[in-house]
Amino acid sequence: FKIIGNDWFLVTAGNIQKYNTMTASWGGFGVLWNKRVSMIVVRPQRYTYEFLEREKYFTLSFLGSDYKEALSYQISQIA
Image (cartoon, rainbow, N blue to C red; front, side, top):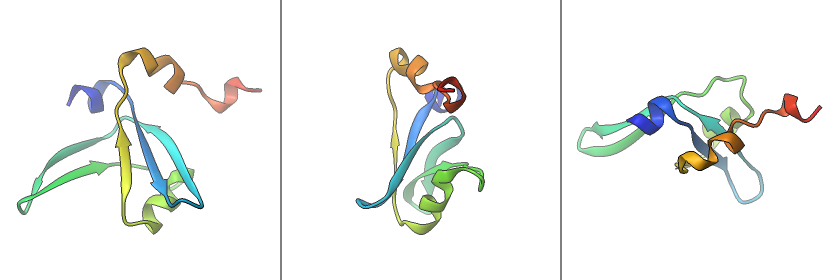
């Protein structure tokens, strides 16, 4: 719960031909009708959203705190 609520994780969706990864910090884990589930919240404006809508599966990756600076890198920092 701490990782999802306070730290960041990566969401990857798509297929072998085309995919995208984004950082996220909203979601949860639980059990629903005797099945293990994960839930994430992604705005429709995010590029990854179209992959999440189209594909059946997605991946959540959790990295150690030493990666937080790298994960906070924004496109605006490139310009």
